[in-house]
Length: 193
Image (tube, rainbow, N blue to C red; front, side, top):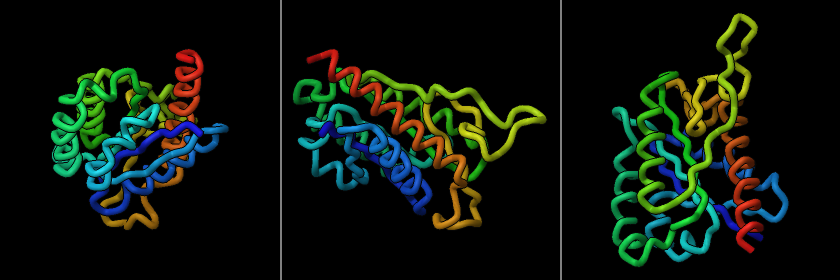
């Protein structure tokens, strides 16, 4: 089995549902296993993250950026990972985020997560889906209905709990991201061997 870690923070449960969908997408690929870790759990499992072939990062977008809990994880990684010789160098990385608004400055969060991965010497995998729901023939049920390229984005109505939101199209987009990262990781691992 090849492990791909999913490190995420979820304030209200919506981003946790997205993380679970990413894990399901990873596990569509033979011999790949997803390891779900909250940002709090991850800070006591640096060795598990070092052993993973890829890490997919997820955070809700609050006030035009990742949540404070995700930022605390990022800052903790500086000492635990970078100070010990770039332990994540050449790992595969990707990201996802969720907010209440359809745009909601999610791109700013994805950019911050991508830069964080770059600072660790990781290789970023994008979503590789065209934007959807952008024509009179489009549908809000399509993958990438919000039109992001850098990572998977979801929108959860602020008056709906995590048992309802985010909608299925956004969860399917997260599964797509998980599967894409798993396939790229498999290629990368085989090539290295």
